[in-house]
Amino acid sequence: MQPFKLEIYNKRIFMKTHIFTTTYNEPVTLKIFIDWYRKRIPDCKITVYDNESNDNGETEILCRLNNVELHSFNSNGKYNERILMNIRNSVWKNTDADFVIMCDSDELVDVRDKDLLENKAGLVWQVCKCRGVELFGDKRDAPDAFYGVDSKKYSKSVLFHKPSIKEMNFAPGSHTCSPVSKNGAPVVVLDNGFILYHTKWKDFDYGLCRVKQIRQKGRSTESKKMGWGFEYDHADVLLIDFFNNMYNKRKRYL
Image (cartoon, rainbow, N blue to C red):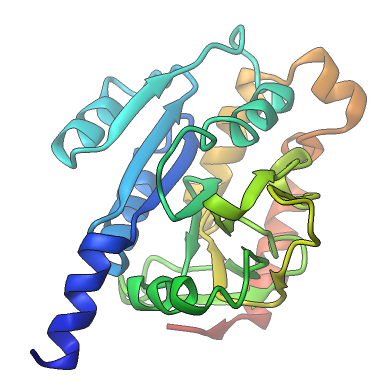
């Protein structure tokens, strides 16, 4: 048996990857999300937690057509970071997968099945802190071209070896976490690992539309008090200046 066939055989029999995400009225980036992970990790399972999207059933149809498991959760009609944190810190615990990716539907980890298979064989890391890149696109860009800027804000530990981890303890937005291993030993972290692309600003019109959707939905009382999601309150003129500034600094990654 040739090595390539052996690698594929081992992957299918011995490695499982489960990807979890939350979403609200994001069928555009969710379609990119599903296609991205299915291309890089063909046998992965994808589970979507939908915050009662009112997108004329687009999210539901997209999940059904792509064999994606879909659950709905209620937040009393508000953006509620506490509920999102609870989901991120709990829904993966019952999976029998070897690796979990727990991220938003506008976040893409540039990891492939062979990378995960290699890590499982030697378990070099238990948690991977991915290197954040925020994309700033233009409708004139090629569909498969990624232009962006390195972002410490979006460097997140969203990929981990599930059998090793008891708790992830994600903070708001998953920008930080405090993982706890099952055996009580220090968690082995791969710092500055695979790239994590953030696609909300894949083009300016889409990014502004997303901000306005959350702004119209409104934030929960606790989210306002704690400052969670404060960026959605920024005036449009500030968002325009932000996008233009980042767009002028962008470089090509893919």
